[in-house]
Length: 318
Image 1 (cartoon, rainbow, N blue to C red):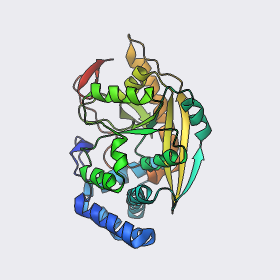
Image 2: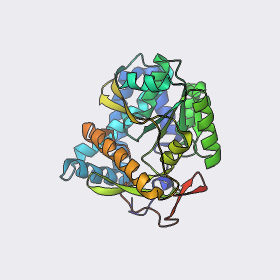
Image 3: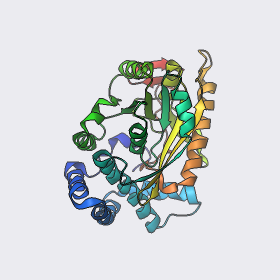
């Protein structure tokens, strides 16, 4: 992928037929057969998706400090494919086939008990879907997920076909910024956990840079503006894939309330992004093959609107 190509311009991996095939194998052949099929799937994507393969190699070189081998890139793609397949099993069978470790769950529950709602900020690491295991264990903690359905329509259709109730729990990030903020605020008023990914900006968003793996990387500011607006506790969350059927769900309290001053917002946003990037890098080093941004994450951000943040198409001055 060229340095100027945005991740949203890349087509959805596999398409409907590939996802239907994965679903059929997984649900009718069992997880063991499904995992055997991951090897040819991994090889196919390694050979056919050159931009993603090259982006993986550049990322792994940053992590390990030396050129990545083809085996490491294959392992990276295989880890991603494994988590995609496990999403099918999680929705179809719940957490029964898996082993989940939890870290910081008691701290999350303490903040949820306040009844104000909690904003969970994650990243494209491991399995965000694994967080639904918390919903199964703690039904008193409703979970709403902010997700752009239009970016991966085939995957969205598959997941909602497996578990129709999932669709009702999604706040569609393709809406305008005001609608997203209102839906999140309403969920928080009902004491819900509202989860969103905070490491990847969409094409219309303004990005600010924070150091990640030795170089400044662009991050969206909209999650932090939303956190400021919602005035609820913010908890970082990571669903790390440990191999086999094992996952670790990590919850780290980040802030009881995000405050961004009206004047001179830039430094406040930079400080928030720096803290977030530090924790992101920590877990990248804990589980390097869990990082699933298969594009040039460090590419130059858009030059437009340098003095404003854009939230879902609505400008918010910073």
